[in-house]
Image (cartoon, rainbow, N blue to C red; front, side, top):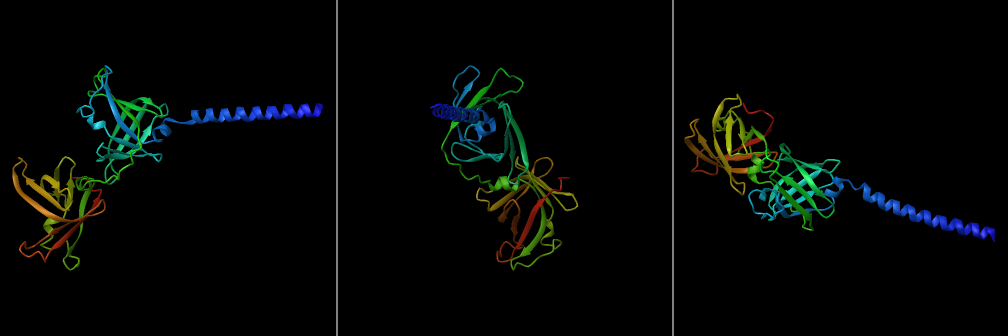
Length: 285
């Protein structure tokens, strides 16, 4: 009988131990969810914005519109942000401080070069809400907007850089030329030499092109068509007066190559030269 009682008590204590262990495990799971894990646990959608008075602000208000969209913070430290219309906005790297009080974004361009770093204060970070604070004027911390995000099932769109973003993502150097037969043409060829050099297409829409000897050749404004098939240069003198406009056909535009086509005789489109450029670390003189 004593043996049976001992076995019964032992069985009861074993059950209690399993129950206590299970509770501890569940509690530990909750405690172990870090701010980074919370933020990367779901996609987020901007659903509200309020000012320092607690008043709701329209998501189209210019003061908050730039912060509105769908955000995807991946566990590997990468992020993408899209507008509510699925237009790509920014992508790059993200981190959250260990105490969950700040989020940092390092935005990167098509060539993975850093564009800027942006840090915001987090006011709420739970599995149900992610809210951060922005200040229209950093010198006046009494005026602010809280940007509220809630979990969403919205599927992440493909992040595709525009032709303009690709061309401005790096500096370019002329590294080759071929004719319509695919034959290599010397960069010193009279039909090619005027297009050889270092090109700097700035995100603000201005450009500068230098010879390989770092002598400035032309500068002004530039654009690329939305389909990436043509590039337009508006050359200007130092006073800002337009000198000429030049449009060329683009045959290749990726983060690894930019090639456009020249026609020695515009009346004969069967004869042409492809001017190839590749990324360079050569700094703008």
